[in-house]
Amino acid sequence: MKLFPKILLGVVAMSFVVGASAQTGTLKKIKDSGTITIGHRDSSIPFSYYDDKQQVIGYSIDICMKAVDAVKAELKMPNLKVVLNPVTSATRIPLIANGTIDLECGSTTNNIERQKQVAFTNTYFVTANRYVAKKASNVKTLADLKGKTVVSTSGTTNIKWLTEENGKQNLGMNILAAKDHAEAFLMVETDRAVAFFMDDILLYSLVASSKSPADYAVGTEAYSVEPYGAMMPKDDAEFAKVINTATANLYKSGQINAIYDKWFLKPVPPKGINLNVPESPQLKAVFANPTNNGDPAAYK
Image: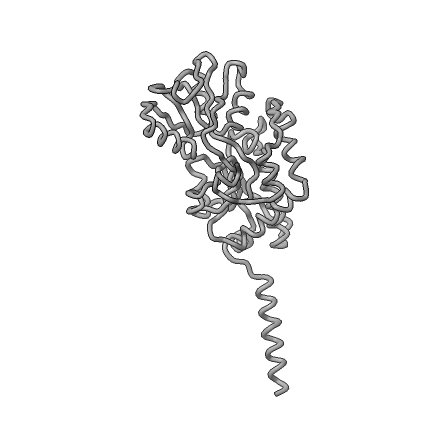
């Protein structure tokens, strides 16, 4: 009878040690490899992009690096190597889904459809789908683009919406698909397209960075609400808990405000442009009560 309590105590102790140290899924992959791989964009100013020294910087990157710090603490790996892997609008979801990257830090809209393939962190920005066109084109509404050539970026919610709306309204637009935002804006700049449809914050940054900002106007019509979050592997609750706890703490503590001000209210490299975009009421609500809801109605 005396032997049984000792055996039971040993089993309990062993299970505690295993339970405390064992990781699964993405955390195990990161621990075993000694690296965490971050997907980033090349021209999504000010979220995720290359500066003039070819360094990856941006608002999304700063937030994701706070999440990386949380992973380092969770795994007790302060020297965990961070690998930066460029992605495009077309490749970002497949690269998360196949495990090439662990966290995608860019300007990606969280929606119900995408949540079937990937998971999202707590929302860190709320924007809207609009268009940019040259003022000389006299485009004021979507109807003004009937029969015209327009562009959006491949693999985005914007080009999906644009294609569907083109059919619904029988607009007869010729829709071009650009590989990235910089190429799409260049098409408007060189008159290969009349308008570029994209999230308004990205359009404002592209206009501000252009050779002649005064030549362009962003449309006043907002076609959809676009909440941004970083993508993570789907159905990995352990990894998601670490990341979302870190982002929630960042928001609720108020530390996010300094990061936001750095990228939206102060000059940003490489050209020193200042977007001068204060936190919207929707974003303030998200920071106060973090959410990764993919329903646009949750942000109105």
